[in-house]
Structure formats: structure tokens, C-alpha cells
Length: 485
Image (cartoon, rainbow, N blue to C red):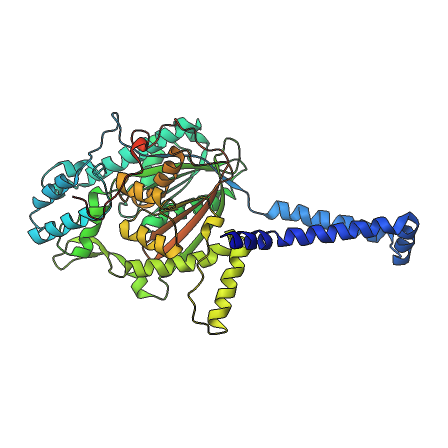
């Protein structure tokens, strides 16, 4: 470890050391010339006034053009995650209640109920996850109506937006862009229209409704908001909302691959405010990297697929090769994001490993970069225990580095695209965030997509800030057994 630390210090600071050495040598050489020799040397060059003018004007003009054309920096002013409370009640469904309600769905047989029960015991979910109001009733599927779906959406999203506006003090009519993602619930009028109507947002607001893009759509929404802010007046604000409405997506068949979402997905949502103004900002958006692996790979394209089973029941089919596809997609994503964030020492080791394997034919394992040298915190999509296990193994992460993901899955379940924000809230609630810390969010979605967003902390949240972990953070982290009894 000490040898590696020395290597990292030498390589990471090599450019700075060389630059300092050249600058020092040049300065010493100029001092040794003396005034008379320096004037004689300049006369020998036969510099004209035009040369001196261009020498100063061209760099200044180039710098001006660069500053005018470079993308504006985008900041995260604040964010707010939905959480159940006394004034926004939502059913916390213990596993036993969930299984009992499933037994009363006439189209789901006893074999499927036993399968779901075993799956829940190994899922990594706790007993406090929340399901929509329809799951309070028996039989559940009869209450999964359009009206109840709208009620769930409004409860989650309006609560998160109310909390966000209260935190930031931003007036709704100052919001210039609204980007919302919700994959499987897409009514008419659209979900963004519901928000615009509720908060009386501007008539010229640029609103976009993303659907069908899976659990990584929240990062896509943040990247899209960043792009839209480039064409709005400086200091404009963009509201990003990420959620998944569970009510209309209750599967009532017996295909095991389609029963998984019933067991894993839970209610959640987040509202985040982005701006090109750094005033009162808490994070700076550094990078957005998107990779799509379904263009020439039908297996990747269909590994998360909404379809009908043999009896005509609609559900989401999660393929058996999902983890393999996720691993390949992650590899493509880190190949793109690595050069943007990794220090020179890690990039050099990766290049040497690549040359040894591909050029020299050496039988060695690919070098996995140490991403802890680039990030202080990692928020991995809490899609399920298998997803977190796969990423921890693939990236060689410690238990502490995936703690936020595992605890979020335990406390809130798979809340789809908003799970990354619950993990960020966990890190802050634990008081681990520091100014200058870098945060890596990794999300996976249908198609198949792997997306990354990198944030840099400007101002950590106060420890007593109200949030989704306020009433439970003192109990975490908890030990999560392989099989829950």
C-alpha cells in the first residue's frame, strides 16, 4: 500500500513538477542574462510593434472566445425526497401482509405466492417500505385504477415539490424548465401538465415528460435539464422530478420473471432544483455520461421488457441475463467516464494492463481502476441485492462504499430512478459529506442503459435538516442477513 501511494503521488503530480522545473529554469536563465544581454537578444529577434501587438491580442481574443462559448456551469440548489409522515400518510406494508394480500389475488397461484415469499426473504428489503394505497385492500388488483394511480402520483410528487420549494424559497413562477421522468404511468393530460396546473407555473415553461426509460431516467432528466439551461437566461432554474407510480403496474400472472417487480418496487420520488447561478447552491454538476448497449444487442434490449404473458396479463419481464447485461453496460460506461475523473496514476495502470493483454497477449486480468481515488461517495442504484452485489464485485468496492445503497434498499425498497437521491440523503444524514467531496451516481435502465452523473459538494446539508432519514437514521446501518426469518 505504501509503494502504491508513492507511485500515485509521483505520477499524479508529474505534470506539475515538470512545469515548475521548466518555469524555474527559464526564470533563472533570464536572470543570468542581465539587462544588456536581454535587450541585445530582443534586438536580434527583430520584433516589430505588430508582432508585440499580436502576441498580446491573439491569446486574449482566444481566451475571450473560449469563455463565451464554453458551456455554463450548472448547480444543484437543493433536492427533496418524498417520505411518509403524519400529514402525508402512506401504507407501510410488512412482508407478511404483502404475501397475505397476494394470496387473495385469484389469478396468482400458490406456487407463485411461495416463490414471492422466498424472494422477499432474500431481497434485502426491510419491513418499513411503502406501497400505494391500493395495497391496503383485498383483492389488490381491483383497486389499481387510473384514479388511484393519479392519487399516488400527486401525493408523492406534490409532497416532494412542496418540501423543495420550502427549502429553497424559490417562487414557482421563476422556474423556466420542468423535466419529469416516470416510466410506466403516462396519462393524458401528461404528468408535467399536472404539475404545471397545480403550481401555476409559467405559460412559456419548457416542460418535458420522459417515459419508458427505466430506473436510470433520473440521471437522463438531470442531463437534459443541464442542456436546456444552456439556452435559457443566466441564473434560470430547472425543476427535475423523478418518480415511479406503482399502482397501475401490479402484475397478476404467474411468470416468475414478471413477479419480481411486484416484490422489489416501492413508492418514492424526488424533486431537485438546478440552476446556472451558484447562489445558495449545494452541489456542482461536473459530468453526465450516458451509454446505451441495446443498439446492436437484442439480449440487452429485451432484458427489461414490458409484455403480456400467455394469459394476457401485462407486466415487466426481468431477464435471467440482466446481471450480465448490467455488467457489460457498466464496463462501457466506466470506460467513458474513467478518463474524465480518474487521476493519471490509475489511467496509466489501466493503459498498461490493456497493452499487456491486447498487444503482448499476456494472460492477466483486466485492471479495475480504484474509483475511490476519484470519488469520496458512491450512489449505486438500489435495484436489488443482486445489482448491488454485482457492482460491488465488478468495481471492487468496500462494504462502506455500498452502505448507502444497501441501507436505502432496506429502508425504502427499489424506488426506481429516485433511489440514488435517497442514497445521497443517507450520506448527508450520516454527516459524511464534506465541502469538495465528489459523488458518483450510477443508474441502470431498460434499453439497456447505464448512466453516470458526478457532483461536487459546495455546501453540505445541516445534520438537523428534515428529510427521508430523519426518523430512522439513528438505527442505520443495520445488519442484513442473507435470508430474512
